[in-house]
Length: 91
Image 1 (cartoon, rainbow, N blue to C red):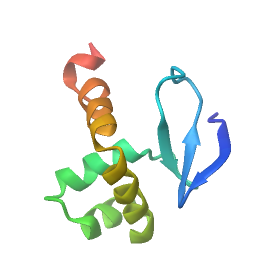
Image 2 (cartoon, helix red, strand yellow):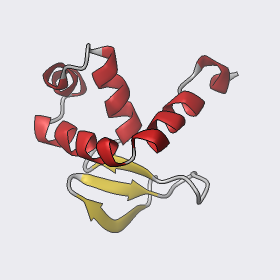
Image 3 (cartoon, rainbow, N blue to C red):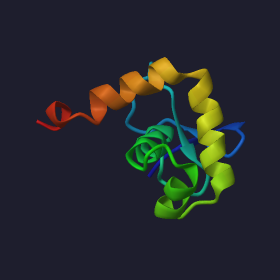
């Protein structure tokens, strides 16, 4: 079970379970989706926020919260995606 901190960033909560202390990962409130999941889904849907929201079945406002966070921490999130979402990471 995820342990969520009380620190809230819009519709996002910081997730502390099973992550090394140096990694800052936020997930959507009320879901198991993290910012990297959302950004990956947006990119897979031709950068359509509306299509990503529909596919993930979350309000577009939550997708926009992820985008605002991504705008501030793009390099870190892209590095997370490249490292943990790549086929070589699962082998």
